[in-house]
Structures are given as structure tokens and as C-alpha cells.
Length: 154
Image 1 (tube, rainbow, N blue to C red):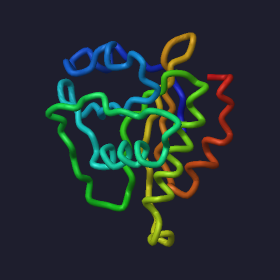
Image 2 (cartoon, one colour; image 1 turned 30 degrees about the horizontal axis):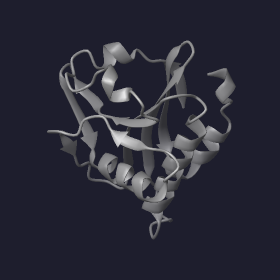
Image 3 (cartoon, rainbow, N blue to C red; image 1 turned 45 degrees about the vertical axis):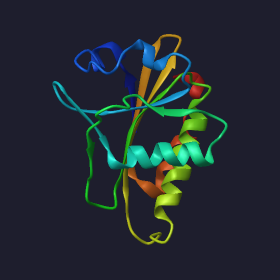
């Protein structure tokens, strides 16, 4: 896992569907992955993840940034490709991580013996600006990796 700064303005400068208004009053927003200079997409799991959060995680609102004409790509493997998860404050980060961890557990039900990789990024708004936490690794070690993070040091 790696942590670094994230320039939200630069991220969506070429993506007309994203703007500051999308984040107003939101706690957690699923953002598309940047594919090339002007191309963005959502992995198929994005829709499933947001539906899962809406159905089972009533304590916090999760929404998709772009509702119209989104490009969804299906990646054909057991790997779990999640969206960029924008979190309104570092206080909500543990909640967002727990939602992703629960989603991973649900996806693995009945396939516990199969190896799966997870790719997800959390963008967290802090007093100093946005920070990004990238995880690309084993699904079975996702939760324990994030349990080691001190959110006060972001």
C-alpha cells in the first residue's frame, strides 16, 4: 500500500462530468478510473459495490460521481477492481475501509479457496488537501493491511 498527495483538480480537469458540486453534501463518492488523457471508466464492480453499500450499509451514503453515460468495463477474472473511493474526511476512512472489506468478503463467499487480487484507491480529504491510499494486493490481507494505518497521520 502506498500513500501520497492527490490533486483532485488535475484528476478531473479533462473529465467534464466531474466538478466540485458532485462532492457537496456527500460522504463517500465512487470515482471512475482514468484510462488515458480524456478517457475514464468504471469497473463492473463499481455498480455492484455501490448497490451493496446502499443495501447493507445504511449509516453512510455512497454515490457514483457520474450517473449518465458511464463507461463500464468488465474485467474477466476473479480479481476485484473497485473504483476510486473519495471520502469526505479522515474520520470516515475507517468506515469506508470496512465497507470495502465487507464487500470483498461477500464476493469471496463460496470461493474462499481461490486467490483474488484487489485494486482500490481511497482519496481522503484532510486539512492539508486530498491524500490517496492505493492498495493493490491480496484480497485476504486487505483488512489487516489497513488496520495498521493511523488516520491521524494522514
